[in-house]
Image 1 (tube, rainbow, N blue to C red):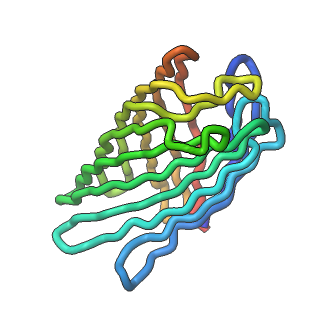
Image 2: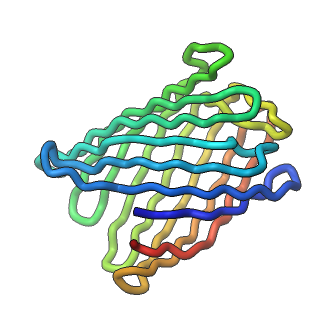
Length: 194
């Protein structure tokens, strides 16, 4: 189980988001169930709430297959992402491919498809994840303007475990959203295992 508290600065505005979730190991079929909920008291930039659920099925030979759902509620509309993916674990490395179908409630149809690759390196005290993706998705461009845009991004995320309960997390990314803006992500935080 985990909780989150984040401050985002976009378009010169600070906006806080708070979340709760859990990654639950399942024995049969062998895998991990992911559930989570995030809400924000101010909704000028971020979604007012988001719900996510997904399952990561682990099979023999280091293969994994996943399906996920993410619903974001904005003040003027809502956007849903449906994702599928497959990955391969060998040694302390994992390579994953993912495909995301984005919909927006006003159009009520698929308005975008994006895809990407993710590579994760597992070390004794560190997990380093690099993600690259491109395609079309539903994004907020500020002041409650939500629409479909072409996007491309890269993200590098590291979690360093100090001991079995506490970890430091550092994340950096760059995202280009056509016809809207370029976004840079810099995150530093503390992760506590409950």
